[in-house]
Length: 256
Image 1 (cartoon, one colour):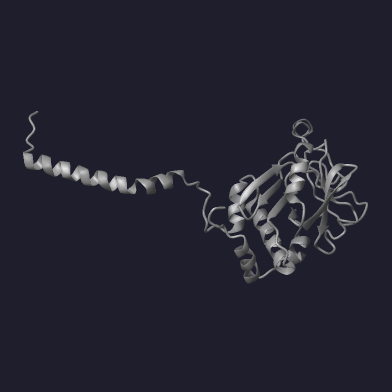
Image 2 (image 1 turned 180 degrees about the horizontal axis):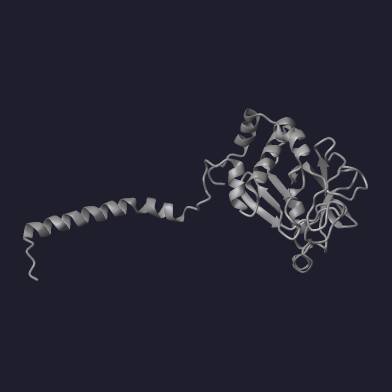
């Protein structure tokens, strides 16, 4: 086929191509940024939304309740907390159900197996108690305190913040510690991990690091869909304005 394009047409086409190419170059930095920007990195996300995206195996409703309770406690006490541990006891013990977050940098630090008390259930936990000698886990919001070396090795004390729900935690010695019975091999073979006397025990391989991450006034939120506790918890009743003030303290900042 013989081309019928004249010299004017060729010049016009070349000029058009040059303009298109220049437009592409001008947009290239923006295109590159959109390609490599993580899908989860949205500064407009609330803290609960951001943390839920970091832990897709967690229930977003539980993460949001944990954030709400933690922020509510901080507005009441004035003591800030940069780390938040969330335990979802509605999941079986054979599955990771403990998540530890850095709420300032919005990072997931741990996703782990965690034991429940022997009198809370077998593979799943359904019974909870605040009573001494109950050998059961407790629900609600805790604030961590100091570490010590005990019969279970390096351990972390916790203060229960909810009267009648977990405020006997110190008296009951409900602490975070490592335990050999918390391991993936047992979960695969037996369908569950071992049980504690009420403590949220974790794998020995990560216990020391996890405890150091959470010591010194950080928050631990233990969840189960218990209607009475959900309706009575003082830390699930803060107003929107109170929570907004706490949310502003941990808003993402440039360079973090």
